[in-house]
Image 1: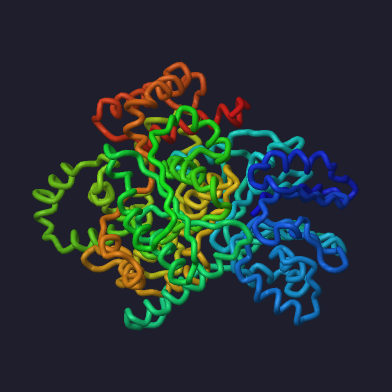
Image 2: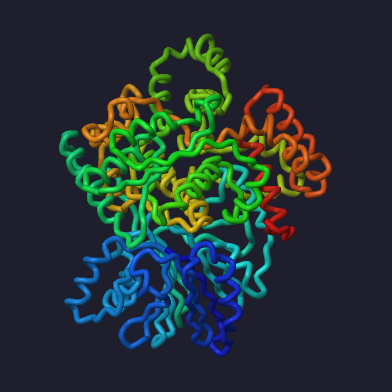
Length: 634
């Protein structure tokens, strides 16, 4: 696990200075405290910071092929490395290390641009072909590892984190207003955008090639939905087999390894599979927020799994001083976020790092097997269609309008989706689905934004989720939703902050449920086996692991993995809100209407509505602005 950086001048006669790569590497030293390496070759410079996981002594980067003409810097792990090495050795390649990075150098010699299709892993890498003056940059199938690219008329730069790009000469931190509008819509910025002008995310499953023909990008993998009709038992057998193989591969490590354990189905299944595979000592880690916050507290469920699997269990109960945490965490994140799970992920990662260097996480199960309540939306629509039209206006609409919309409540998905469906029934399904996942909807945007930004919004639709829904390679609504989430919120929100918050404490997080083979399998499973007609979520996954988990875990209600910031905004974080979202500060920035922001603060404080996500969006944006644009120390 590492952080990588690179710098390339379009003018082949202009050399990259060593100090440029050194400064970029220094900005991400937390990603790799164990080692540093770099390559300078005329107009090309590459560097890395290493967290030693495989071949601790011999895995120094860059790694080269036999004649030193192919060089690689790499962030991540290649889990099918043993098979690749055997194949390449049979073809005559000679390996000098036990490190998986070396397979990329020899693999490029053998397969060229087809290399990423051969890999099973989480990765972001750059390969320099010195003989052909050719550069390849790639990101893994699902987007587990982040990669950012800066481009202008004279240079191209890339890095695992944006802060490394900003450390390079003549790359300035400037706000991209379209990125801000996307952030206010989704709570994160979908790829390929970012909050910074000229800086973009390389999308998942994308390879960028720079050579004499210029710069071009290609998508090397995508998921296809639909498949043969089979009985549930057959699907369960294949799912168990792939789950076992994915976890087995991702146990590869020369340093201590453990697992996050929230007490939910996904993390519990990972731990149970580790035990099934014969792992002797299993260290598990959980976090809670005290008895007064039952919605966010899953410690009792995690203890049940720990006892059943006989793990070495560690837990922490916190009421953190988020005032002190916010600024450094936003610095690590590079961009603002509204999913409060980033706080929880950081805190439990910090706990785990005391005893392990690698952690397995259950991230991704909900997006593969329909574990969120919003996926129930199409069922609500079908039920609504069966109701006689005369009852719509007289009975259904008045009832729905009285539903609670407190976004901290268990029924928030059903309530919000139902309201949105009734108010915008004539809109296409894609727009309805995006309307559910929006933070600030259209009317809220218009009321919040200052005049100039509102004019920009009218030119920039910001409908990435709807676009992925419309173009999904699936015919049914559920799989369209799953595809849209796979391409947006999973890679650029959930996986992004999982990577950044774990790497903030130099911890490598692996996600066995997102082995691309499991993603492909989940896409082929019929929708009715993922989401039961009566609303049972993750039906097939629960069936597949039913013999591995305690029944109380299999049949428990879903809880959110996040922090109770809504409560904090009314208590410990209220002074911070009043300071950073004051009338004077908002007016000075000029992005938002001060009276609109004050209305959100007051309504939330007086419990007239739950504006947790809205306020967290505004708060993290202000902290991000101070950290990166005003250049205040995090």
